[in-house]
Amino acid sequence: MKPIQMVDLKGQYEKIKADVDRGIQEVIDTTSFVKGGKVNEFQAALEQYLGVKHVIPTGNGTDALQIALMGLGLKPGDEVITPTFTFIATAEVVALLGLTPVVVDVDEKTFNMDLKAVERAITPKTKAIVPVHLFGQNADMEALLNLAHNHHLYVVEDACQSIGATYTFSNGTQKKSGCMGNIGCTSFFPSKNLGCYGDGGAIFTDDDDLAARMRAIANHGMVVRYHHDFIGVNSRLDSIQAAVLLAKLPHLDEYIVARRKAAAYYNNAFAGCDKIETPYTAPNTDHVFHQYTIKLMDVDRNALQAKLKEKGIPAMIYYPVPLHLQKAYQDPRYKAGDFPVAEKLCSCVLSLPMHTELDEEQLQYITSSILALV
Ligand SMILES: *Cc1c(COP(=O)(O)O)cnc(C)c1O
Image (cartoon, rainbow, N blue to C red; front, side):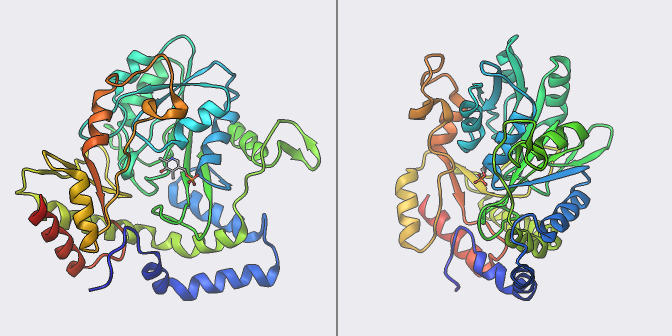
């Protein structure tokens, strides 16, 4: 059996090696390393794939989120609502910009923002909501967009884990993850579903004015060369990363299928086990399984994780501590117990190996080992 990894980037690379290597070599041959033709080519290819008007490449997903909030022109003290169960970057950029993160609990089945909690958290200072499509499943966007519309709030989607996921509105309209709110943000970190071989990210929007402003902000606030209309940052996707992404984008849909196949195998294997709750997918969205995350019932998680490790099976806890209990984000408004669903999830979730290269022998070994241990 091949060794089991959380993510197998080498196995994936070997299947597309010729295209990746050729693309990288072309960048070196042209020495067009920054803002090269490959970046424009990738931008156009991703716009087409997503069905969105503007893709703005950035240096990473965290920058994408920061530039999005800067593009909206939010002011210190403005409140931005984010879920407490997420990767730190979502709230980090809010805090960095002097905005006030207002955290809300999540839904115990989908792990995504609880919209009743969002509604309760809205105040006259609220300016934006940042839903996270956690683990690859879209948040309940139709209800969230209605709520945002009624309260005149911006919506910035954190689609760092959900690129390629599709959401279906009640009128049958379908949209790609990150292309429903005012702005969407994604990451091309190597382990993400569309990962490059270093850092990378992108912003999506259908709004021409916002796109122009965010494109300028990502480039030192520059519209005409050496004329700076905004205070900006330096955040670029480099051409070598764009070449890797151009080779991988045509395979994204088949990568999603491979992830779903692995998820279906896990679901099936764990179906009869009352110690394991398998991931739930809401009816209005599909799931691209950036992570395959189970909930353990009455199981010593640390002991299980350690025993799996001995058997050569990695498993990770995404995430062990909710935002409101992180040291750097201590806030007199929040204390332990305030967001019981997120706190419970942090104590019982376990993410299993999930990538495009898992084979049946590995899946059989992982699932039978877990079933024997719980
Ligand atoms: C990965 C990730 C980010 C940050 O992306 P980077 O490219 O690592 O900066 C932000 N939010 C979520 C939910 C993520 O998973």
